[in-house]
Image (cartoon, rainbow, N blue to C red; front, side, top):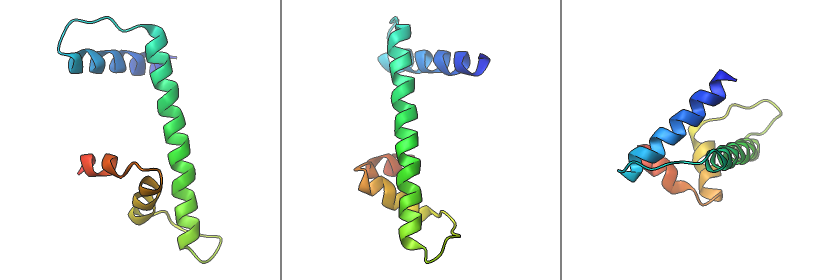
Length: 85
């Protein structure tokens, strides 16, 4: 429970920081943002595993940087990786 509160407060503070002004952020907006992030993470993980499976030959495989890059490219999110460098 405390972790969710920390995440909510962090999101609110980041939104306020990027706004450059003293704004209010609704709980509903923060909740929707968190759910969207969870969905994005879940979908990214699924795509990363698919990329690793298609690259590997057997049942046992390791996820490598190349798999993450391929998955993000397939999801049209290559720009995210470019911003992290």
